[in-house]
Every structure is written in C-alpha cells, then in structure tokens.
Image 1 (cartoon, helix red, strand yellow):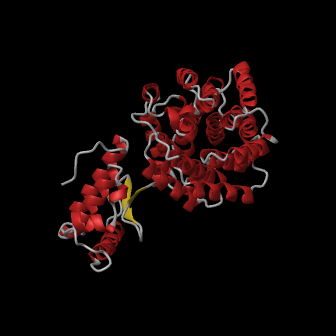
Image 2 (cartoon, helix red, strand yellow):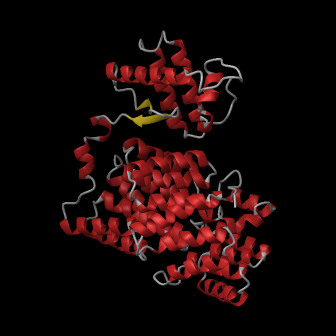
Image 3 (cartoon, one colour):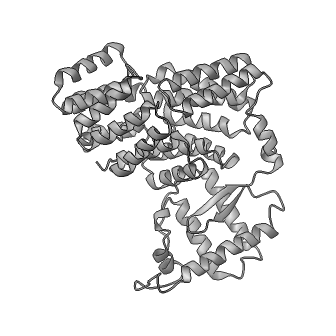
Length: 461
C-alpha cells in the first residue's frame, strides 16, 4: 500500500501524467496484462511523489511482484524481465495509438537500464508548431540584432570573467535593434538572473529588468521554451514563488525536453528546495543532452560541494578549467571545494587567482573574507567586510564573513537583511558549508520560511 505523500510535481503536470496513465491502463494493449499494469502504476506513483530512490530492483520485486525479504535480484530476474515487457508494451501502445484524439499532452516512457519513468511531451503542430518554426523563434530578421544575440549566448555560456554583464549588454542591444525579438528578451532575463544569483549582486537593481524582459518574451512568443524558462527564473529567484517557478520551468521542458539550459536551472531550483534526488536527475539529463556545457558542470560541482562530495566537485571544476582555461569559475569552484574541507591556504589561493580577472565581485569578496577569517587573517577579513558594507552590496557575502569570524548574531542580521530585500543569491548560497554552524539556530528556520522553503537545505560538510 502506497503511503499518502503530497506530490512534488506541480498540480497541472501531475493531472496530465495521471490522465495519460489511465488512458494507457484502459487500452487494449494493457487491459489484460495485470502484472505490467501494477508495474506501471507503481513506478509512476513513486516518481510523482519524488521517491525515485525507491525505484530499485529489490523494492520493485517486493512491492509489485510479491517477493519476500529473501528476494535476490541476482538470482531472480523477474523485475528485469517484466521491465522489458513494460517497455515493449509502451512502445506498442504508442506505435498503435499515438494521439488519436489529440488529448494526450505527454507520453510515459521507460529507458533501458532504469526503472524511473520519463514524462515526455507530445508536441503536435497545433500546440507548438513545427521544429522549423521553433528554430525560427531564435532568429531575427535584423541581422545586427541576431549577431548581438549570438554574442550574448556565447559569452555567458563560456563562463568568462565578465560573462554575465557582457552578455546582458549584448542581449539589450539585440532587443533595442529588434523589440519584437522574443528569444533575445528571454536570454536577457536569463543572463540578468544568472549574474544576480551567482555573483551576489543586489537583486533590486536587476529584478525589475529581468521581470520586464521575461514578460516581453512571453507576450511575444508563449510557445517558446525560452520564454517560460525566463519567467520561471524570475518567479523562483526574484519572487521566491517556487510553485509558479516550478510550473513555468515544467512548461518549458514539455515544450522542449532537449533544452539542457532549462534542465540546469530546474536542477538548481530543486536543489534550493531540498529536492536533491530530482535535482540530480535533471542535471544528469542536462549533461546527457549537452556534455560540453560549462554551466552544467558548474551546477553539478556546486551541488557536490554542498553535499560534501569533494572528489566529484573537484573533478567538475577541473574539467571546466580544461575546457575553458580563461574561466575564473573553475578557480572559484576549486576554492569553494577547498574551503569546505578547511584547506584555507589552498582555498585563498584559488579565490585570489579568480580575482585576477573578477575584481571586486561581491560573491568573490565574501568567499575571500570567509577564508581570511577562518585562517586567522582577521584584519584582511574585516577590510573586505568594510568594503562590502560601504557599497551596500551582497548581505549574503557579509554574512559569510561574519560567520567565519564566529559572529553568528551579525551573520543572522545580514541574512535577515538579504531576506528582506530578497537577494536572489540567498536560497542558493545559504546551502553552502560556510553556514553550517548556523543551521540549528532558530533564526535559520525563520529565514527558510521567509524564502518559502519549508525545511533547511542541509550541507553534508
């Protein structure tokens, strides 16, 4: 008997998935296959409840096929055999049924080697247009505008020193030249969000621009995945409306399941909400779709640091360094990895390397100040703290330095300031190991509530 758990997908997507499952179960392909019906129901229900970790051979053998605790999958192959049958039945169903009435918005699939179901969109010509039409949305009749758009894309996806402000400038130029260019408006919102979240810039300075850009993208083309990604980022990281952000990102992935960038953002959004299994699933799929994407490896490494998997984190950041030697984000990532392990001298060296090309960035100053404080270089830590206070930037970074100095009350005061002004970096950065000592304090739970996050996102460090 499945326990009653609130589903973690948005209600609209859940309803579509359940409706499609019922259509499958009623079909002539499945109606007499009782074992396969139970198998499909079980894996879909577990996935809807964010319990993919239970979709293992041993659990399925007992829950679906009635095996007892002595069940040994190495000896009894029933799960593997029935999984092959289920994949075959699903292929038969879609080959024979397809979308006869146009009612199905998605398909339920099973990949070889996995018992976790995939929910893939059925993009009919009526719903989203042809692939050629989708490609056309990323172009502009104004060649100069299109060139600026491409320059912006390359900049921030290469993770160079000034990638986010430089890319935002290119996208701004693109929409100035062609105000009807939906893809450029969406990319502008994405670049503004990325810069605000990852570099620790004050949200108030960019949130209005990002919101305007996302709204323009949706008004101009609500059938493009990029438009919904843009609005999903605004809803999530600027407004902290995680449910609406989840809905918009879900729409984007139904429109374009091969959009690796959307999956990266969705993975980070899920990680902020503490849904790490699903975050890993999305990021793994993003890497499968685009294995050379630097943002994919940056996101994977960032989450690995917060989970205490330092070997994996180091591998990801060194891979970025090999693929893009000019990227300061490789040094920043390695610095985070060393700092989480208490290797202050090594961490400081990495952050200083990054600062050669990224000077006076709030997030980087916070990292350096934290390492200085933890390694006993108190004067240097306070100097960076004073610089951040003078500019009024990044209360989260100031909180990190206070935490390094052991000043928990001041750290919480800065975090509360960040929550008050809705600094977009707060939900992501607060999961870092520099705030481990604060996690069991009562003000921390209050911060989580303000951010709309029900439970603390714990670090394994």
